[in-house]
Length: 446
Image (tube, rainbow, N blue to C red; front, side, top):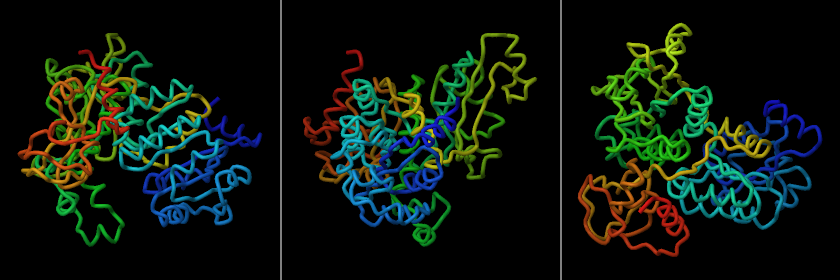
């Protein structure tokens, strides 16, 4: 029986999955737009610290006004309505939620909400990759200790990629690489909120008219979001990040199997079992033919000579010799697909991607020469971008996680292109995000 049938059963017996959503941005709004059309799902609460965003999201999602008048979570759970609040932590003052979708953007907020949800007995669907890249494996472990599930959110690329990796491994295939498409050229890593629109192919005026956030799009252009997403994939699947960081070579779907295989077989990978990105732009700025800017991919091989010979017979795009093949999705649908995760964790007890190891890290790298006294402004800001690297390397060298490079002051100057270290800032070791990160570091062999 599939998830849709199980949801129909829950709807028929009047026991829907009771969901709380934290964060009424783009992802949260897209989830709401489909959640009201899903059987067996009751969005009982929507929280956003901006009191205007919750009602705006419900309006965009065409939420029935009569369903959004609950005065409390208890009222919403009893009457089948939706409670809208500007206090996310209020969702955990009353029991009853089965799943919490955490769709904010700050690591500190995401970690606080996830821990509170787990303590209240709710599964967590984590959209917040700043939180996941900093402490995801620890949050997942906390959930398991309580008999709960911590899951990446389907619809965002990490969970989509994890599903593709799981498909390949379940079929007995060996994964060469998995990753996502990205609009990228060397130099994009220095983009700031003031310059981002020239890289995106837009203007500040058009961006404002469309309600596009300069910080969100800067994090997408400068490589930070891709690094966080592929860190999530690596920590969930065990695939390893490149030792020198993401290369993001230009490549169309037809060439995936040729490019994303190990260098000893003529490809670009340093080894089997890697995460990597693929650029949608040629070095001269032209669009790649058959690009995967919005998509995800996996390349693979098999030890069976007979099956390998059949790759091409069944229409799989292969490398020249036919030893490696590729599969991909051209698009992802963000919050529109997140209901898959909600149903999976609540009905099957299974995540759609879950970080169980500390393989990859996202470290802060200076975008420009930073003077002592500079206030670090986090992902999508002016000071630093996020670089993906092996966790053991980042911890050994004392590099600062990007998710902690926010609202702190540099103690000394850092030149452009250099990774920041823990010694460059003063952080309170008893602060929850810092403490969880230190706990995660203890997982690595000394």
